[in-house]
Image 1 (cartoon, helix red, strand yellow):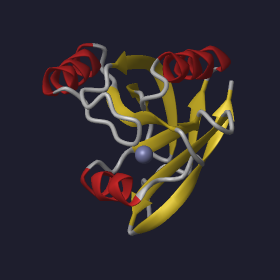
Image 2 (image 1 turned 90 degrees about the horizontal axis):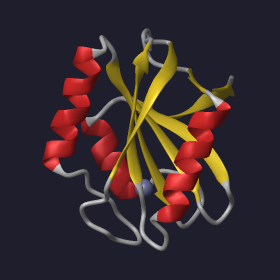
Image 3 (image 1 turned 90 degrees about the vertical axis):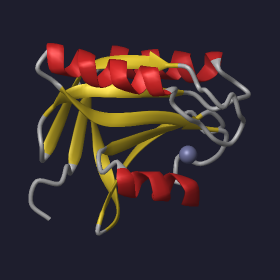
Image 4 (image 1 turned 60 degrees about the horizontal axis):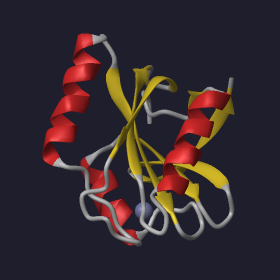
Length: 136
Ligand SMILES: [Zn+2]
């Protein structure tokens, strides 16, 4: 599909920040917004960590005001909310619940596994596809 991201560019320090955030929230899942630019190749320029409103081990929810703040910040900086990050106490693969929300939010979903210390990125565009993570 044209315009669907096939890769997402993150810096080493952004990944380190997400990893730190994920570990801080253990044993619960954590989440963050990835602000940036690009369609086929998404470049993340800003990581906005948010609290997990559900404070749950196997699910996450973003507080509504945080969501508004993310979109407002993105607009102010002429960026887009290009990705959603959350962590898993399991393999970095989308759960069936994730898939449902990915359908509503067709951006890049970056998942960090706190058990495997591994990142993976996905997008649901017609079908579930893995997005390559490029580290800069
Ligand atoms: Zn998940």
